[in-house]
Image (cartoon, rainbow, N blue to C red; front, top):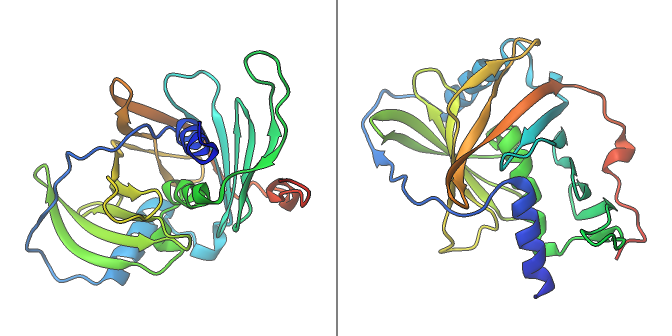
Length: 248
């Protein structure tokens, strides 16, 4: 198998994305005048309460996908660093490139060594961050109006991420929480978009509201990835996001 294709399939499997969902067709609707800045501010307060933006420095959460009992342990260090401890090892994105910094043996017990992941997969890691921490809090965005989806109203906020992937967030017009997302993992024109749906939020011990997971199209229909043990500002060591310079 082509190595680049192998990397793409591996990363998308690890992160829970198995295919596009094309059923969501948002319709434009009339609505009250509101600015993008107001929407973003209200979305922040809906999620993070009275915390200031600069007070949220890192996010940690455990994700359970495809019915697995062992979680992916994910850490975001704002603005652009990501670490994902999975059953196959440890993935790190340092803001520029991504790598397996640790690997477990394969199913036959053969050792697998740390290695740089193919460059075309690096935009996926920016999406991973954007799924845990809405990218419109971090980057420039476009307000694409009030949309009606399944009889409910949402404000669409579009963000193009630095490495080319893009994501549309659908912010509930009533409670200002993100409820749906449409993702282009690589930003290539004409590619199917991947939809995921947030059904509910839970309130953490910090008083912060965080998704309980999200629905997505899996191998055999709709699946739900579950989030647990959400924390902020865990003070991760910067060394956790370093990719050794000798990796190929």
